[in-house]
Length: 127
Image 1 (cartoon, rainbow, N blue to C red):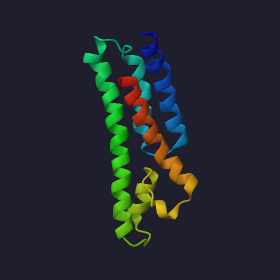
Image 2 (tube, rainbow, N blue to C red):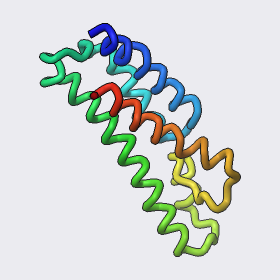
Image 3 (cartoon, rainbow, N blue to C red):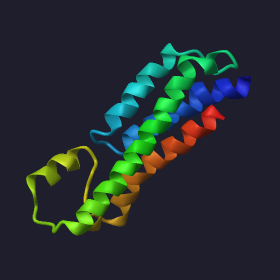
Image 4 (cartoon, one colour):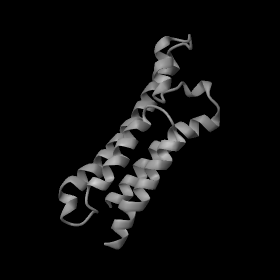
């Protein structure tokens, strides 16, 4: 019971904070909203995991997984579209969707690791 509380009240918020600060773009706004919602939910117990706390944790997992799928889908689309400097690519760049073939390895890690980390952290807290 103490471990669940520590995971929910310490590990999850610190993971969200690191995801927000590591990848500073529009997709991090969702993680900021989750960070602000955590104090409003009770810590996970057998009773609260049947209600809102479980829904919050699942929303974090689904959101991070969706962000990963979006990245993969756009990378597939970018592979088949020539890099002509379309205006919509600049707009997507503000949300964190960049053509990974145009950025260095450090930026690739910066863009993908927060979503993978949040997915695994959320999964760990649910379990």
